[in-house]
Figure 1 (cartoon, helix red, strand yellow):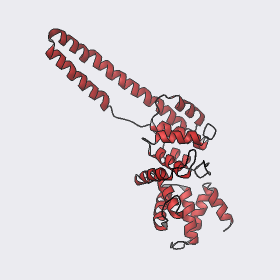
Figure 2 (cartoon, helix red, strand yellow; figure 1 turned 180 degrees about the vertical axis):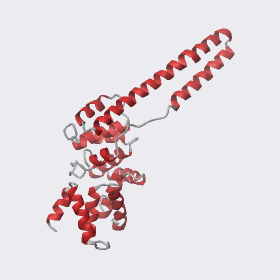
Figure 3 (cartoon, one colour; figure 1 turned 120 degrees about the vertical axis):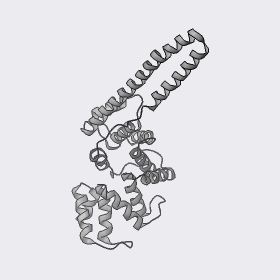
Figure 4 (cartoon, helix red, strand yellow; figure 1 turned 45 degrees about the horizontal axis):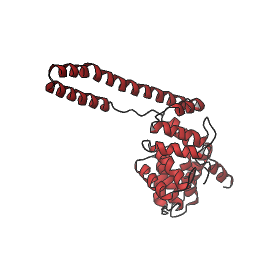
Length: 265
């Protein structure tokens, strides 16, 4: 089982939590409306077929049971959204320990909450690093959070926190990339660049992917594109000036690989 090589630490969490503030998922109230219509229909049928007694029962259903049921469902949804929002607010304020404690206390964790818990364990935010727990929460979050799916795929491909499964990870990563997930796009580009993990080597496609990730603000992508342009390898036209510029920007953003590379230029 492989450990994280530091590629994402301090990189993805900053991008994913500060570029666009995290917000809890919001779902429509269709379920409780549907419930109301169904119960109302049942009440009407009872009233039509069971006389006066049925009408009384139908009235109780329509004017007592249905309103109370809908109120309960809505109040529980509001309570859940409120708690989730508190967790996201704590994360955005970088109060990671409090955010993690509150997130872990939630009984039914949404995919978004599971994703944030996974980030905590993956990067050691408010807790010790624990790739196994990070993997499990990203797996849970992958059912409804595209960032969680990308992280789950990345960990599967590289065998971080769990037994390596390249085929499943590759499938999930490509799916996330097709939905314009920035992390997935970056990793697909990097794997294509090096022909790694059964990805076919395709430098031109890799450059498109990496430039897209670079435009989304990922400094690690700037490092990769910078090296390619500076060295002008694999059919890419050399552009030393632009390559050095990107490498310096990546280094200024704290990318250790860029810092080390520039020492030898």
